[in-house]
Image 1 (cartoon, rainbow, N blue to C red):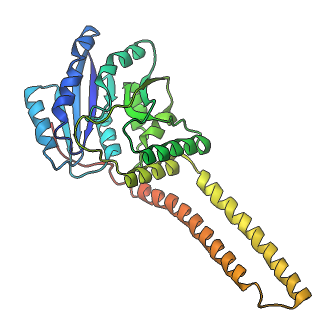
Image 2 (tube, rainbow, N blue to C red):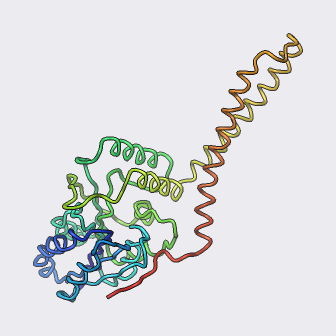
Image 3 (cartoon, rainbow, N blue to C red):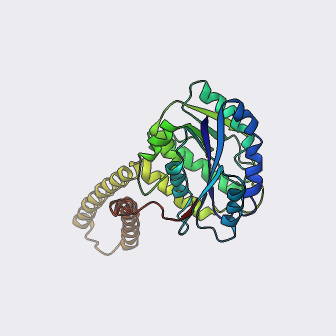
Length: 309
């Protein structure tokens, strides 16, 4: 039989592990009929609420359940990478254990693979249940990425994706430390089917993604898959050089005609402050790219495993 490994990144999801496991198993009969065995690979991302204990209970009762436990919290991107790296099956699917990724879609997703698609990805058609301001900035982010990046990043895309081994290996070949999987999916390409569904709220618990974390994550995406900010910084710098040159000419002419060196200093101060602000802004953009390069060249491991089974 072929194998489908369900990769489940977990961080403080104690109450969701068992319900998620039971929901996925409802599809067992379908996959058995297709000659596919279901396996689970839970990746405990440094949880401290007993999540690992719940996973161990499942593992002791079902030999199809395996797990990796990180030495600390490395983040969801690292957990997904570790799952793909340790799942040696013909098919893999990445799912959140909070049941926001509906398990009942798995049969439909697998049917598209049978039709010849290399991967099946999901996207939400709405953001029902999310705070309005969060939804607004999310739409802004995807709109910006669509304009400044050549890589396809779909609005509302989830990490919930069923793929063949070939696609998984392609993703693993991108071993960068600063990971933005939504962009990596688009970069590797392959024949992908998009499956839309209504947004589903968490079964239990609270989201681990605060507004600040999402903002940092969006910056990761922009710097990882677009150099447009560097071009913007260069353009703004050139523009202000021209403005400064024009001001110098203006001041010289005014001095020669009116002989009035004192008048106008408030506007000059405003110009200096604005120019300095733009310089610091552009330097900050350069700093972001330099920081990413710094982290990459150190070649630190993406994750460290403390325990596995």
